[in-house]
Length: 261
Ligand SMILES: N[C@@H](CCC[C@H](N)C(=O)O)C(=O)O
Image (cartoon, rainbow, N blue to C red):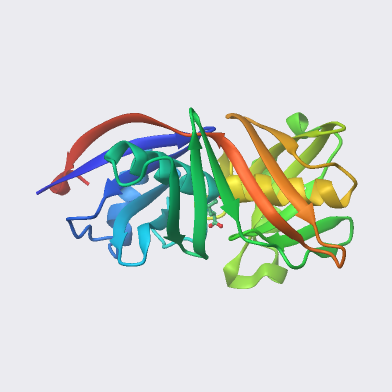
């Protein structure tokens, strides 16, 4: 048996995508997902996503981290899944779909995908840092010079801090570049390394920038390109009308014999 797959990327956050509408991909096989995501012996990706039918939505997105475990919400993965659904003819230019954290709306605008994120009700302050959930848990630290930072070492130290116990966290280091632009580097849980971009992380970083006085929309530079985050701040704290926007495209497609993974 062979697995047909597509490889997509959104600002360098890359995913193995499987059209699971008529198949039954054995995603409970953690070792299989992990081996497909392996950059030396597999296809290579930060995660694997199944696009499946759902009776109440245009489609359902099921996301697995590169370590093979089922993940929480993935912002870039969702933008890539919308592009994938458009290319498969599942949707036209708008989508309403189900992800790990519930319903999302999205729209395709030429090479950009705009994704509506869920409201964020609270942002915890931890010393000078912040912790919030944008579909996945994110720790946000503002720094002076993000390019000089050892994201792997400093990210891991926070990721495995006992405060976050077995749930863990993603860790975002943020530099303010101008009145409306930040630069974000992320250590991603489940990849256990820095990735070129993290959509839920960029969203978390932009919201914290908003708390610090930055106006929406916030431009976000990442190692893999540029994203934009729009939001409205609740008077009582928290955020609503949150949108993540950026490019997402197919890189290649192929098949992998199951016995080789
Ligand atoms: N790359 C993602 C975040 C995926 C979830 C993360 N790995 C986790 O386990 O929390 C994104 O674009 O949001």
